[in-house]
Image (cartoon, rainbow, N blue to C red; front, side, top):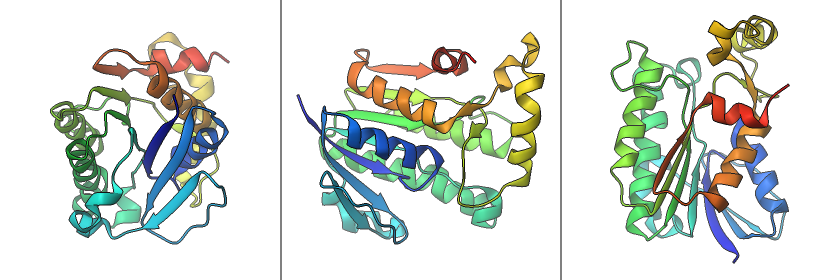
Length: 218
């Protein structure tokens, strides 16, 4: 069977890796990209739509297919404030997911975060937890939630804190009590996203760091 899929966050670290893998996968027939800024994707499988995420109701018909991959996200620094970050990390993603469910999309695959918890004192982890809770209530046939830690890979923008952590954490995480902070490459997360989208049979599955590290044993 060949699938039609929609991706949000296709220009990000995980999303860009995912799109490349979707192109190469014979089981993916068409890739519908919804983006916030002008980007160029040159492949026969891809249709790219630049849309205003503040007016998602106007793009209802574009949020379709067999699967929705949600890789959208930003930082407080990029967004300008926690409230602005929340709009991207929670509101946009949930609205797209809700419309997808209404349009009969059957599978939903989300990149969340290790430590996501709606009761967390961390604003970032609280947002991620709140989104997970809202997504679980939607009527998809299959929901996959991936919870990676620090993502490794080349970003469009330089993030000093993440760069320093990427140098230090791989060594520190050799200690068992720090293993849950072990970084993982964006490519490995994308590989897991594609794998679960094609093979998960349970209605809901949450893939923790240990399950992601099955692909990342080095």
